[in-house]
Length: 280
Image 1 (cartoon, rainbow, N blue to C red):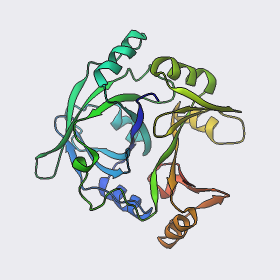
Image 2 (cartoon, rainbow, N blue to C red):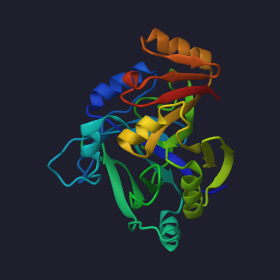
Image 3 (cartoon, one colour):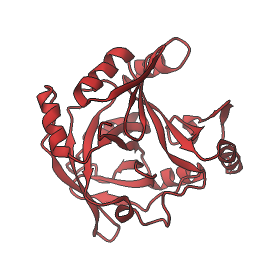
């Protein structure tokens, strides 16, 4: 146990309402829009048991953006952007990373406002140097409220029509999987769960982080050549893969591919996100 979870994965989108429609077609429940005061961004969420997806967009491009690289990302594409690591001790984690020689900000408060301007919930986060970790920009977050307090709309927000229970794994496209994963292990204390040809898996308390390097038979080389190293694919665990497939096809999702125990959705049908579903 590392006391670290994949807390949430940020998906950059240009239009939150369009993204809501897309993810509802994929069988997810999506929260109402919220805003980050003083940060220039707004979001909608897809909530699971202990983690969530954050559909994030710029609502004030002329303001002081907390994530200044978000507009340039959206100029090029939509899709998987960065991800966050949840911890019960953000201050202690920040100290340990600093002691490991990696730049990290002092923990700062953040909040999300509902449509009426009231604070829905708050947290503390510490941002790690975006260039420090191969494969993805990341940060620590410690929430001030329980999941039940944070998410009340839509009703029963963690029960999704597509049967998804949570994030099974997040894949990062990297040039050297062994070297990249070793650095994450040294800085964060993550344990290596497995190593296969071109892939190293590290274990979080709730999910897995996969480091994948090109092997000549996939799109990783083209992805890295175009966008550089970064989040590549997200895999969801679901209650009944057959039922998930029936729902998605019934909703008109195009381009689905079933390969044994894995159902994949093309980026064109998922707001630029490479996503797959597997049986829990």
